[in-house]
Amino acid sequence: MHSYADDKHEQAVAEVVRAELPEAWVSVSSEVLPTIRFYERVSTTVLNAYVGPVLRDYLANLTNRLADTGFDGILLIMQSNGGVALPEVVRARPATTLLSGPAAGPRAASNYASQLGHEDCLLVDMGGTSFDASLVRSGSAALSSEGEIDRLRIALPMLEIATIGAGGGSVGWIDAGGLLRMGPESAGALPGPACYGRGGTRPACTDADLVLGYLDPAAFAGGSLPLDEDKARAAIKQHVADPLGSSVEEAAAGMYAVINTNMAYGVREITIKRGLDPREFPMVVAGGAGALHACAIASELEIPTLIVPRTASTLCATGMLLSDLQHDFVRSCMGPLASFEPSILTGLVEQMATEGGRQLVLEGAERIEHQVSLDLRYLKQYHEVTVPVDSAAIAQGDMEAVATAFHAVHDRLYGYNLQDAGTGLELINVRVRSVGHTERPTLPQLADGGPDASGALKGSRQAWVPDRESFEEVTVYDGHALLAGNEIAGPALIERTDTTIFVTASYDATVDALGSIVLQARERDND
Image 1 (tube, rainbow, N blue to C red):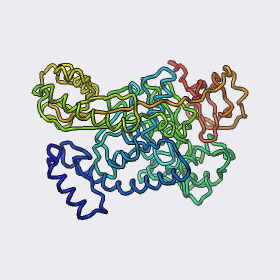
Image 2: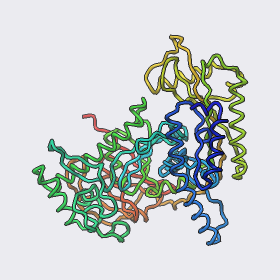
Image 3: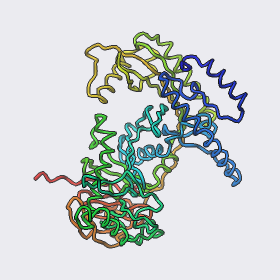
Image 4: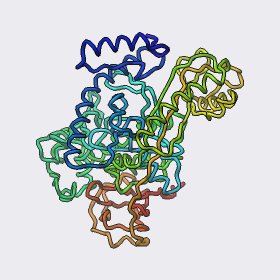
C-alpha cells in the first residue's frame, strides 16, 4: 500500500512472481506510478498490466516487419502526454500509450496557429464516431492526471481532452419526450450512414449533411464512395421527419443544429468551466467531418477566428511528426509547503531529471529541457492543483513565489483564492517533465495567388445556410486549386478529397501560405 515511499517489499514480490511465472507480464506499481492514493495507483497498474502483452506483441510484429522492408529510420511511439518515445521505453510502461490516439493533434494545432501569431488555440476534431476538444496555451496542451478508461482511473499524465459521442456517423433519433437527439450511438463505418448504401437504415449526421447540400454525392472521398441521397432521405423521413411531423429538409436542419449544439458544449467543457473565454482562442478544426460544422459551432460560442489546416483530416499524423521526445516523472512528497528544506525538493527534482536525461540521451536527444511542477492544495482540501514552478525558486527556498503561482492558478480554475486569509499550502507530489526537442519538418507552402479565387471556382448548388435559415445557391470551390492569399466570401463550400469546408454567411475565408483556410467572422450587426 505504501510502495510509493518504500518499494522493497513490492519489488521482492515481483521477483518471486517472475521466477515462478516467467511467462507472465509483471506490472509493479512503484515503477508505474510511485504516488500516494492507493486506488488510483492500483487501477493504473492494472491497466498497465492489461495492455502490456498486447503492446509488446504489436511492437514486436511492427519492428520485425519494418526490418524486413529495410527500414533504417527511427521508430517513435506516441504517448498520451503528447510526446513520443522509443518502443523500448513505452514497452516498459505501456499504459502511457492508452489515450495516445488524439494526443498529437494539439501539437499540430499549435504549429498552424503560431503561423498566424497565436500562442493559444482551441482544437476541435470531429471524426466518424466522436468529437474531441482540447486547449493549447502558450504553445503547450493542457494536461491532466485524472483520466478514466471504461470507468477505471488512470493517473498518468495525459492531454486534457473533452470527448463526446458526436461524429459523422452519429445517429439521429426521437426520445420518449418527442425531442430530437443526435448520438451518442454511431452507425460506424459498417454499415455506416444510410447514404453509404451498405445496409444502414438509420439516419446519421452525414445523411443530414448530404440532404442539406453540403456534400457532393459523386465527389465524396474523392469519388471513391458515391453517396445515395435517396437512402439518406428515406432514413431521415422514417426516423426523424415523420415522428416530428416535419419535412425531410427541416428534420435534416434540426439534426445539424442539435449535433452542433452538442459539440459546442464539448468546447465549453474545456473553456468556460475552467474560467476561460472561448472567444479569446482561435479554433483549429480537424477531422474529416469537422470543417462542415465548425462555423456553426464557432457562431454559437462567438469565436471569431477559425483555422482549417490543409492536413485537417490527418492532423494527428501531422502532429506526430512535430512532437518532441517526452517523459514524465512524479514522486509523492507530502507535508506543509513551508516546512520543506530546499535541498529535499531539489534532490527529488535532480533525481527525476537525471533519469529523464538518461532516457533522452539514449533516444538521441541533444536539446534537453526539464520542466518542474508541484501538486499543491490548501490545507484540508482533498484535491490538489498542478502548478508549474521555476526550479530556481525551489533551489533558493523561495516558497513565496511558489505560493503566489498556486494562488493565481487556483483563482483561475475556481474563481477564488485564500491568499489574503493566510491559509497554508500542502505539497503532495513533485513532478518533472523531461523534453528532448526534435527538429521540426518544414511544411510545404503554396504559391501566392492574390485575393481572386475564381480560378478554383467549380460552380454552385443549393445548400442550407443556418445563419439565414434558408436554402440558397452557394458557390463551390476546389480546395486543391486554391492559392495563398485567395479570399472567399461566405456562404461557400470548399471541397477537398478528404474533407469539405462550409463557410457560413457569417464568415469569410482566406488561404494562408501553408494552405490553411482561415475563417474570420464578419462584424456583427448591432441593430
